[in-house]
Image (cartoon, rainbow, N blue to C red):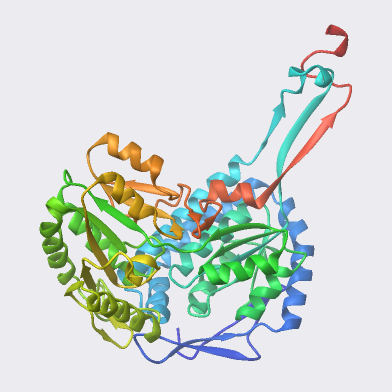
Length: 485
């Protein structure tokens, strides 16, 4: 990609590059790496009209045809893996090793979506089980909603777009995509890949822009379902604009991981170091709070700090880099500022606490106070707080003392603690003998409280992207006739 390449919109089957643009300056390169053509009001109107008309053509495609396209796209994603990872590194500062991992997940997501497309069906309902139903037959099938809107975030722009777009297409919908301003070229590259593999032009449109574009698309009556991943504030704005529409929202987190006294401390330290700073901690399930039993606390802090210091920080295009830059200087400053605030209140920064532009040295904050911003709010950056606990019930309560509830981790071999935590933690998912930061793309993912609602994974997303339609045949029965009562 040329650093000054224009990233076009895709509107009504045409790539549109002429018009107002917004440059993306790479946080590592400090140079313009992409320039996205910004959608205008008339573009939104054109896109909505085209989507409404095109949705009929997509709905008429057989599930087998949709699945075939997605399977080809999975193979093609692996062939383009290095190129796509390079785009992520340039636009976001994401290390290429993380970028390659994200594209591997894109391929998995396409494959799973293809399989789910083949599973869409319906039921013959047991209506003759009640007297008024005898003599009748009822069927259901899952029909496409029609037009879906996918609003995607910067931290995993390729895979989260794959989830939304592939599941929507598998269900038989057309999709309007509003990519993040920080990753327009990477987002368009995923769409181009799908089109090259046979995705019909009626199935997708791409409109770059800011809040005004997102609001206009969210409010449009043509849109039947919205899948949004991003901040709670933006998510609330989307919901207000959307009104009475189906919404699937993943709104962030403040993920906690518990390390019990029976845990393998060295293994837990290695896992938390690897998953607390991948993508510079810019993940809604990134390890942010680690609660360690007091009897093992000092050993964990020492082992964890040592593991964090081993991480290689630097050029995201270098395959050996573990931690690249954050999305921007403001985000990096927030991380070091919150660490300083905790230290001023009595915590100890055992490593890190500095930044160079958008690059944050991986930071460990030991014993932050319970009311520190690092503990209470989502930092979304390369810093982890480590706290001691004494009682298992108390630590579960501490984890729950948050507006968020996305995912948690638990290191223990005690099945009673596992079951208790699964029951009591106010989260959408619990990872045992792993940190909060682990996800399989074919397993339901989502949260409670301010972490949102709905579940992202193709099987569960297809439920949101389809509607149940019922057919009732009066006087025709598979179960006997009324005279037999």
